[in-house]
Image (tube, rainbow, N blue to C red; front, side, top):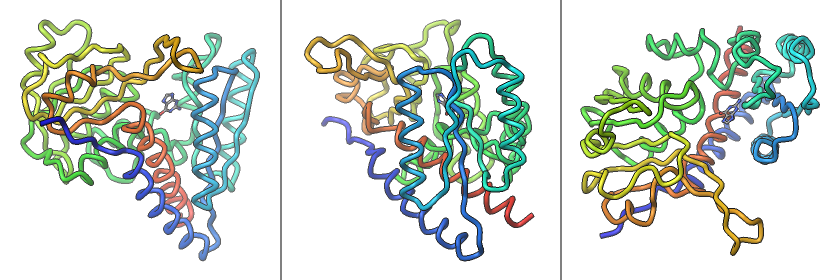
Amino acid sequence: MPAELIDGVSIAREIRQEIAEKAARLAERGIRPGLAVVLVGDDPASAVYVRSKGRACDEAGMYSSTINLPATTSQPELLEVVNRLNADSRIHGILVQMPLPKQLDADTVIRAIDPRKDVDGFHPVNIGKLLIGERDGFVPCTPAGIQEMLRRSAIETSGAECVIVGRSNIVGKPMAALLMQDAAGANGTVTVCHRHTRDLGAHTKRADILIVAAGRAGLVTADMIRPGAVVIDVGMNRIDDPNSSRGYRLVGDVDFESVSKVASRITPVPGGVGPMTIAMLMSNTVKAAEQIGAA
Ligand code: GUN
């Protein structure tokens, strides 16, 4: 039987509705959650993400501000913008879109963001809080979205073999930290694979829940999947497609065609993890507004 799709679009819509209700309750207390997105340069894929973040905020009744900076922006200029947003009382969440142009040092920029406004969850303070299980920090949006997607799809993580392919600071590492916690929606047995892993397929084949965030189109094929596994595809790769009006199409890291015949549940690309990431960004912004507003 073909795998059932995990529909990120409809789960994210449900979450955004809940966020709009929370934002409305905060508004009654005079607090309007505000998100600032900083985009340096004109990478077209980043521009698409940033626009959809702004639209989602508007729909939820949140304040949003996009700061477009030229690709030639210097490190002091970007830090100046971050410092201004740290001090701006309308702004509860700050996101600096990655990747940054090469003259800019992402680690320094991330450290400059007030951890209380770090809705990306990339600041070392928030990564540390995630690792030790402190709940008042921010969890990076993509792993948080995957956990929420599993929870709302009634997929049991407790005791499950969770195999993650990819060890980025944005997805793989925080995903591992999240699933290994002694907490609801976690308690998994976690394996993290990367480009030095010997026999990748031997690991992925053990997975009850396989999460792939490697950035390589078609990396995971049907022979690497345990029958009945749940497969979460974080990949977002543009491949040439002369039949498409844009000249390319988006595919994940998982060979959907073959894997969907073996897995029990699978996320599509697009329409799987992507919409969840934006929903969690908004959720983190509302959490920041609640915490800063109450301070
Ligand atoms: N680029 C790709 N994903 C992300 C994300 O979650 N946050 C930021 N800041 N940049 C990204």
